[in-house]
Length: 309
Image (tube, rainbow, N blue to C red):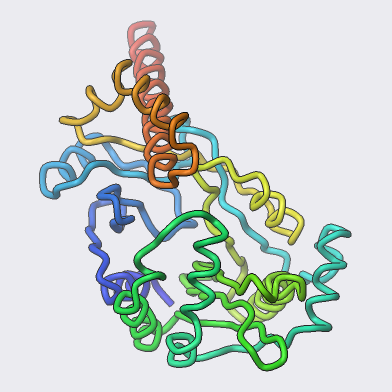
């Protein structure tokens, strides 16, 4: 499967996708555009970035790079084709065994997911104290499942307890990577360990599929989520080091990265610590500060080296 399939998958969901010299970008829902495929690192030129802001109404761009600018982050990957219980942390090993004993894991189609997935979406969003219209609005959810039906590369898996859907996972194959995109579960079944059984089965099945060399659990969150990080590492994922770069619209950058803005955002964060949207805004602005400082430092070093030569 190629990246064009994933582009179509996003567009059929109603997401806007734009293209530049470095590749594709999609709207994350907050007018911050993220580069994809997620396993690819890029280094767009200043001219390319300026052209994107000139042509499109963007608040900002976010991408992963192997370069020296940006904030240290990671992509979670497993590339061991012999993946098995040996890859798991001992505590996760126990959870997987219990899950496989209590749950039945199998591929499901998107029609079934459309009909039975919404309760899992709402349960998961409540547990995580957040909202996402893609999973909470029936019309958006129906459109997402229809996109999954129509595009080659999209797949869905379910873990069942006594015949009831306890957890599901949506995957997408791009190049030789299988990306785990979304993972939702019912709260009342968590004691049966459906997430562990589902993750283990999908990872093992995908890595045994010809042409697939890595399974990815996505990019590290811009939020501090130690529990999620620990879960993925114990499931056998390793962190492939990348740097996150955020470039804000030139008209907004002086305001958002100014001292007053920083003070107001931190104050708002203290007053509403459970506001998921605000936490993401603060984290995005923080990465933009890292990116600007690193870019200025690199520019100073390049200038110094040029003068010395």
